[in-house]
Image (cartoon, rainbow, N blue to C red; front, side, top):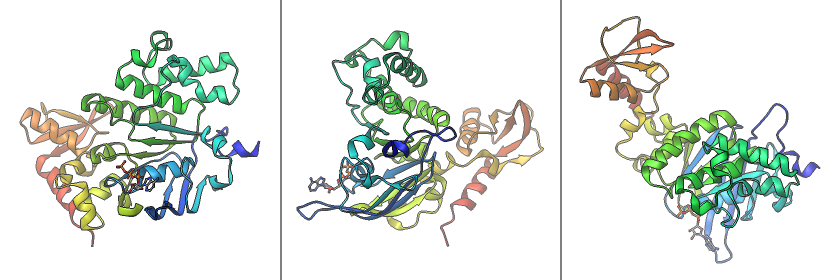
Length: 334
Ligand SMILES: Nc1ncnc2c1ncn2[C@@H]1O[C@H](COP(=O)(O)OP(=O)(O)OP(=O)(O)O)[C@@H](O)[C@H]1O
């Protein structure tokens, strides 16, 4: 009973914290895949691991669900050491999504989604109902898709099924290894958008590996930039990473066009001039970012937009104000 306790959703929680303490992996041939890696992911947060090829991202992810055994260190989920648990049983309680999904080709979609609940011994009716609920949640009409086989879906649809399957037993933790990289850029953008909405609903603790800094900025609550041998170069929210990279190496990695990326993660309110109205100007929602404001200005060839909240104009953002805010925020860290 105890063995499953850390991952069983309690009445009042749907996510658990993840703590890595000086975790390392050295292979028998002497390769140090990960040195001494420490990271704290708060319950309900999405942490992104990004870094150059071979720096140990997948190894870190796979140590959390014990597909790879660490050489040293501790990995805690809600304070309990996963290394003291039965690995097979542990993995049933941690959602895992990989690049090419790995759906079972000879099972229909409903059966694929129900994989873990079946292992956990749920009854058939409950599995079918849960599978339909999850397909709905990831935007696939169960009436249309649940009887299909994986080869009868597009790449993006298969990826959604992969996410549904990982969520089926309501895990508190979700590990995602390049989940969207096998689909084309347009489908990827849509999947990311949908995934953000889904995460707003389910609020799992997620660790996601990617190569794509734009994806990291878009999805991450925090981004961990890794260097060779699984060293942690910086762990920070996207806006902070882009505006205050901790070193030249991180600045290089996040890219020279990070100023524009930073606009996309800076709330519009930071440049809001309250009270003023500007009749006939384009409007932008108060929940948007400075990037939305700039896009609206460029589309209408104007230098000011009106910011609207619940249908009411609450102020304006000017192009000058936007860049002033932007350059002030972009000063290097002291
Ligand atoms: N069985 C093994 N024996 C020796 N070295 C290994 C073994 N498996 C992986 N490695 C090494 O461990 C390091 C980390 O690999 P890992 O797959 O975690 O990197 P990654 O950051 O996920 O890479 P990528 O971005 O290219 O997918 C690499 O240098 C890799 O060559």
